[in-house]
Length: 115
Length: 110
Image (cartoon, rainbow over all chains, first blue to last red; front, side, top):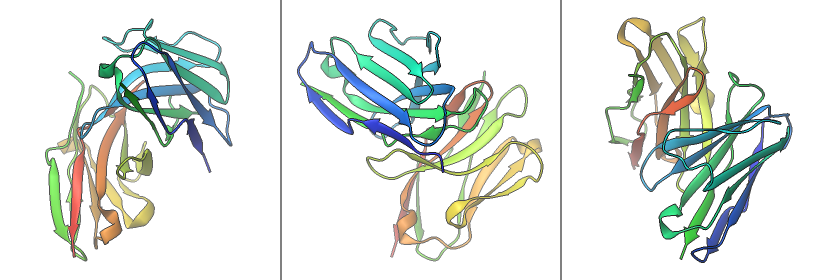
């Protein structure tokens, strides 16, 4: 298979704090990982693409200083939402692929609620 | 501009009836094409994908999709819907990066 996990599955935090979300490929090496954001009843919006060992590429309109992405190994990428605010509340989904043009396998998502 | 369109926001079908979910894309070249299903509060599960070759693609859970280049479409079909198929369905295209359609919510009537 190609299993991708995310941790935590949900998190509630106070405004102004930072939250780290982990994305792991459990049974394959992921050269490329993607982070998406999904608002209620809406589609997924790509936030950034990360390749192992290099800086992430952010989509237009996504603040790279707000959403820090680290892809330090072939099985782990992290998304840190810095100084979270209520408008950052959303469902964050990661995906992992063996290469840039390979099939993406999605994690179960992390629901973030900022109070 | 590159885009993915799912014209139907919500579809209701009776259990046992056939299903077709529409997807159209607008890209410079034929991209890779995917269908994903998402249950409430869950991540996405890949149903099927098309890269090249046979334009009729078989997927999991009895789903199939047909790529029609002339219509820039990749419609998802299932001959007999089960109550467990109720979910949100996303069409996606990939040409360097992946773009998703707005999704179609499927309701299954008993």
